[in-house]
Amino acid sequence: MEKLKHIAVVLIALFLFLMLPVMHYVDVGAYLSGDLDAVSRASDEIPERPEGELIVLINKEKHGKYLEEWKNFFLEQDVGVIMEDIHCLVMTSDPAGVQLAERYQARLAENQMTIRKENPVLVSSMGEEGMFDMIILSREASEDFGFSDFGENILVIEVKGE
Figure 1: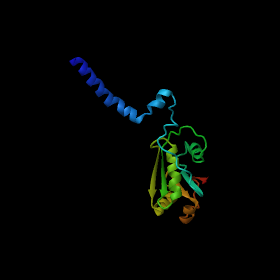
Figure 2: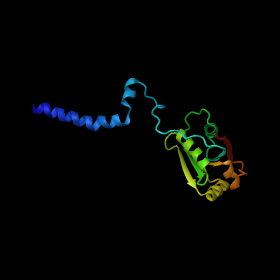
Figure 3: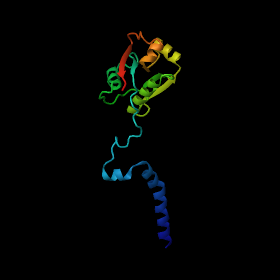
Figure 4: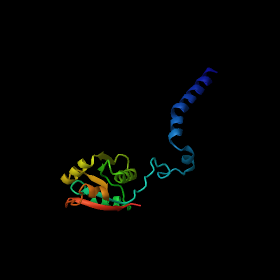
C-alpha cells in the first residue's frame, strides 16, 4: 500500500511540475489534432498601416549587402529571411511613423528590429550626419524638420498609408 501511495504522489507531482505549464503555453487540443501552425499561434497582432504618406530612410553604407531585401520588406512584398538586424529611429511626435515602425517590427523575428523613439531635433541631426540604420517618418514630419535632401548614401522608400 505504501508503494502504491508513493507512486501516486510521484505521478501527481510530475504532472503538476511538467504538464500544467505545457498545457498553459501550448494549445494541446490543436497540437493533438494537427491544426497547430506558426500562423495560428502568432504571439502579436500586426498593427494596421497608418494613413497618409510615409518615408523610410535606410543607410546604404550599413545595409548594402541586404539593401534589396530590406527595400522589398518595407514595400511589404514577399521576402525570405533577412539575416541582419536593423535599428529604427522614429520621432516621438510622429504617431504615424511610430505605428509603421511597430508594424514592421511585428512582421520580423523577435529582436531583429529595435525601435528608438527620440526627440525630432535629434533624429533630424542624426539623419543629416548619416548616423542611423533606418528612420521612419511621415511626409509631414519630413517637411517640418527639413528631410528633403537625403544624399546619395540614403535609400528613400515612399510608403503609402491606407
